[in-house]
Length: 226
Length: 235
Image (cartoon, rainbow over all chains, first blue to last red; front, side, top):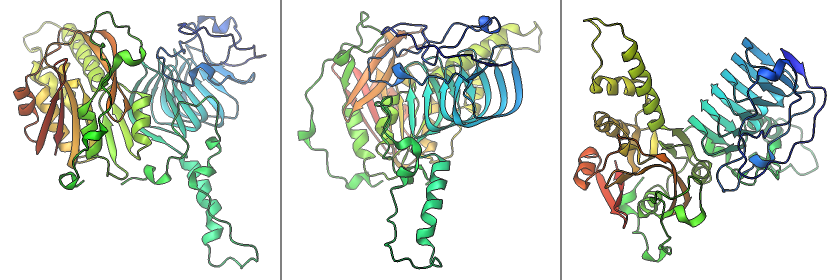
């Protein structure tokens, strides 16, 4: 079920406009995975700038949940994960990349560093760094990530919130807490100036693969409920 | 949103008219630069109406587009996307399949179009009343069944806040294709043909549009040279 990939191969060049080419990392073929449908289309049909051409590659340690496997429960871990089977419950890979393959069917809330959806997801998605909806992706739920990329043809129903994730906001509030604490002993050094809220999110660092994504200066206030 | 007290839009803001060839059957299904761009006075007014909204909420009832999402999120809106036309097509297909699979019986009468519309709305557009400051319906009404139109219009009225705006696009003749709309800038829409039109396409006269959105406080329509009408409705 959980199959470690022995090694990563260099990503093959994707010709512009090529269909049925995979954008996530090449996966080592194995007899078990031979039943998995061919790689998902990822090259955007649109000529608009997009970050999909350089979609994240998975680490060699990425685990693969092949099609035909069905899991009910909670998935956690630190390794990258590709889901081509069915999962119901919750998935939390806060330090890793999570890819829902084209044949993947997930009915769960997802949280990962990077989430790429090329299959079907029914549930809320939280990406610490970013979320990518491929052209074959189907999502019914809310998206929350600093950067969200959506290919033409993706189907999505739900709310979108871009900017620091809830964890990043919480982290920022903790960092700012000593500054506002009146009981803190006075220090000779000047009090640190509160950094912009957006600077707390590690994902705010500019990335060459997200030129078309929303900028990182989205105010935190924009994500509070009116 | 005190749109009544807003200064009128300056005429100096007009941008050079761009070419619009998107309704040509020969148009590619891919974006082709300026060919698919359309100058939209309706969008211009729509954005002006919601320009002073802070932390606003916008509902996009078209196919999800990253460009449109970015456009509004960068302006401080929280965006909700709900591709209602696709939902309707899927729902109707499921219902028709159910009807076909019903065993023949005197008790199993097929649902009427009105009943199907009612069932669809029980699970669609389920948002709180007055939840949104603005709604983009694009050409949704061109693709829905007649029984659904007044119900959707009424539901839109309920979920829009007082002073909120709804922007729609209505064809004056049945569209030859299905389009996806994407906001390029303050008064330009990219119209991307994504497939052939279905038999359910409809054309609207101005009076029909005004009747549909009769509950709204104000309605304004813009007619382009291509006889496509943009409607802007304010609650």
